[in-house]
Length: 589
Image: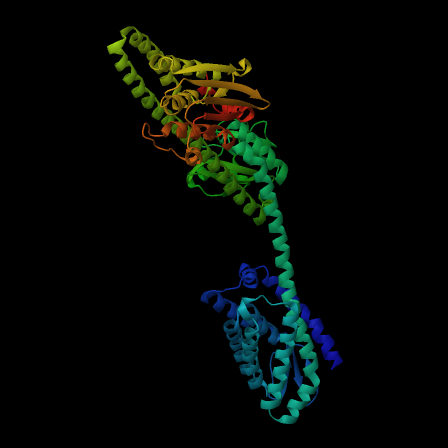
């Protein structure tokens, strides 16, 4: 018995070899990691594990109960012979990995084969195979993955059940008892260990692949973090060169290049002396990749470099896409096609998708900035008619009572509108320009409301050349006059302050008018609040433009007390404004 156990454990080397071979098949890797199989996958799994059960039968030993002799391989079985084998391993693993349906299917294949081999244990062994697959499948509850200990005990238990069935069904009984006495313990131990060993090998190989996959993912994330800042500017020669430098350092290929649809944008690594940037694409296979939008592998005879001593023997060419259209290629070069592994192809494919996504982000970023500028222009355009109608009404009234003042107002209005219209084409102007614009408005209003209010200024001249959105101060001043000062019968004051505060500029417009009701102040920050004398768009539009350009820190703030006046103030962050000017240099004077 001990000798048989040692021999069977040695024979487990065949199981190890088969387990390793099976891990090369993607289907088996999917099987051990998947919690749910399709019907087709279940049929394939049953066939494979059933075949493995048949191999387990043939890799066993025939045992003659009359002579107590063993044959090295189980091939031709006589009526008085039985088999000490590893059939249970394949059937049990079928049930553990695929469920009871796969286990029964594998058990039927392996069991029917064993039955037709013959021998006085053919029937109980065939039944035991089917039963082992079914019972192993029952232990796969809630789609849980099998553990090594579970495989060990179920494999040993399935073999023990087979010994019980041989005792109950095999005849003559004395031969069955003799067989059980000789092979039961070695087979229970060997098959239990075989199930655990098979599963261990599969898990070890898959875990190793998972580690490689995790390493590839980490590499991709590291590359994404480094390349995003460059590709946010789009696919240009400068951004392409920076990205190729990063890819060349991270992937350790002999060369990396990027192209657009017609030219080489960048080439880093070997052969940069004749694969020069800004030169036309040299190879037909690159043009084919652009036309097809598919990843291609260029082997030695397909590169066709015009340089006789070019060291670039092979390449993987992946498309770069934007909105589904191929706009260029990403190329990784090797000495020969032998250096191109499936893993490297998968990595390159992933990198091309990643860089394409970054280019999509760049395009979306640019579109968003254009949309912001369009919205700003639209908001500014809404303000112009608002002031124009008020001014024309004032001039109409003055024509009747004082034509001279009406003429002066008309000249002031002409100057104001000229500046107002030019401001709608710009995203930022200087405080000096904005103050000039506002004072032109105040000349009109002071003419209209004589002795109604007094204007005072507290201006830090160091701020005059800093930038802010056009048409910002005038609507705030107009709002103060119209809603705060005009409704009162007393004389009021209006103060405009512009002061530098470390990294920002504080702008304050304070009036001594009637104030704003407390319940309206919070509403003014988030939406326009219509009143009896206006649509409420002015302050809402200013707030929108300030936050669009500088963020929430620049939002309008309100302080007000009934019958004591209102202070509207906001902050222009100098750092953010500087960045805005840098991004839109063409919009400034």
